[in-house]
Image 1 (cartoon, rainbow, N blue to C red):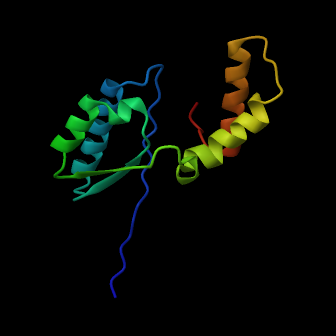
Image 2 (cartoon, one colour):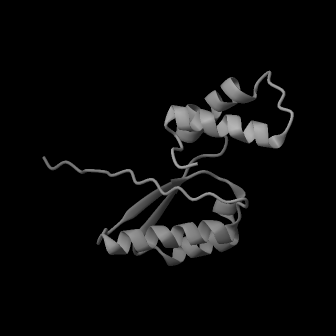
Length: 124
């Protein structure tokens, strides 16, 4: 019996905006990665954020069907999204709940420290 090996590849791109153009640029960086490493098929699991399901993003994904398969998580199912269950839930509980930050910068500093400590976002 032959076993398949799945690699999980993390592409960390951050920015102030979240829109279809940013998402498509992110997909283009994934495509460069795929082509450079001669990967035949890339499976992308994404949630239903508006910029993931916009007409522009959907059309781009369809046009990349030779190398890209998009699997959309069902709506309202955070338990299927590891970011929601492992990071956001604990971040909200440990950093945001019952705390009052004087400035936005203080909140951001606390979030960055927390994510670094948890090993979720070492480069920020």
